[in-house]
Amino acid sequence: MRELLQYSRPQSMYDSEVHNYISEILKSGENFASEPDKLMSTFKRKFHDWLITSQLNSVPGLGTFKNRDIIVGVTQYLDDLHQTRKIVVLENEYRYHWRLLGDKLVIKEPEELVENDNLIISMPFPYYGDIHPQMDNIIKISNKRNVNVHIDACWYGCCRDINFNFLEPCIKSVGFSLSKSLGLGANRIGVRYSKDFTQGPISIMNQFNMNNQILVWMGTKFIDKFGPDFWQNKYGEAYKKICRDYNLTPTKAIHLAWDGNRPVGVRLLLRKLVE
Image (tube, rainbow, N blue to C red; front, side, top):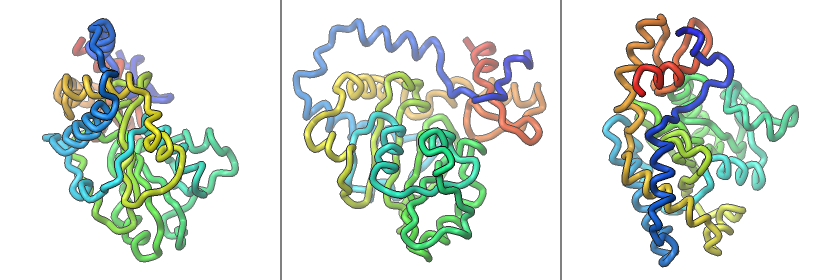
């Protein structure tokens, strides 16, 4: 079954249990829009609890970020950053940045970062399926040179053994979502945490109650149903078996491993073994 390995654009986890639950809640007839303010505040509270109650990962310092805004997945968070700032990224970052800017995208090595740079860095980093191997040095440089760091944490909920301290002064914002964490890529919803208020599309949408109520409601239902460690708990043992059987190097992301010197997706094999 080696032909099921995905060497081109590895896919994050999605399965029939998640798919069926979407259909189930949409057929429920629940009146989710009667108290929109309560809906939004409940989602943000439950989302934060979902993050901090993981038994497999930890996010110390996240509670110090007092500005919390609902986002249509981390993609909207990234779009907002690109619209309001001049962004720099590292090599092997999420390809979306290249699709947005092409040759205009500024790519730097950590040592090239300078004061007032706005660095977007994924944590976990998609190329590695883990925290970037130079993350400690990147944070040290950024603190010393007054670089603004913005964390794309969309992979957080599909990983294990990710322990990252958000107390560092250089970290200005972080975006989390349920897209990869709970298979809601087609119904994106999440939360942006920021230390300081910044004007932009996300702030405007939240200030004027323009968020999509059905996505917020679906996100709340998924948090209640599946919890923070769903993929790892369901597929963790199968992932270990696949890595052993196919001589792959495991990462901390449930859907990604390494075959020699290149990343490879294992979603199809995981579903073959478990579903």
